[in-house]
Image (cartoon, rainbow, N blue to C red):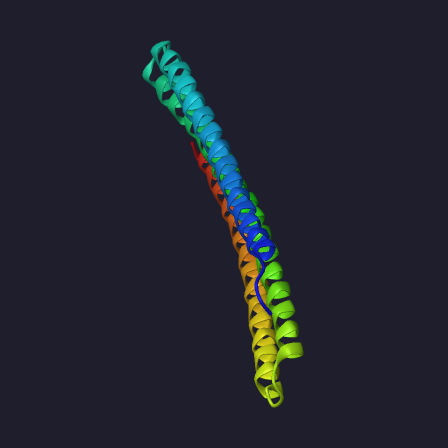
Length: 181
């Protein structure tokens, strides 16, 4: 029933691996977002230059107004694409962090179950009730965690559907606005 130095070392190593996995996932997400932002800024700058040149070359007010109205649609489409990319990075990162958390919870459950089994073997007579209560508590906690995970996944699916619907709505509104102009 005693904790050995090897067990302490294994637990420490598992914790370090989990922390490094989380840090790696976060760094990858930050790197992706930085790339997205750099590309968006570069594209916006290039578009601004092209738009300014086009406006400077306008021969009359009508052409100037028409040019301005044509700039809105590509800008909206790029903003939608950027938003979707950011959302995808966030979703991927969330999925990876969830996997790390699920692995750690599973490991903790296994370790605690093994500890209870050792305690049951070395427990004095009459402690069956306490061990049974502890096992039921673990089962209830696992059930609650499973329910929480299912609800979180459902919420993610609903959010993804809402993002897709909002994207389509913005696209259709932008298309209608273009037709009106």
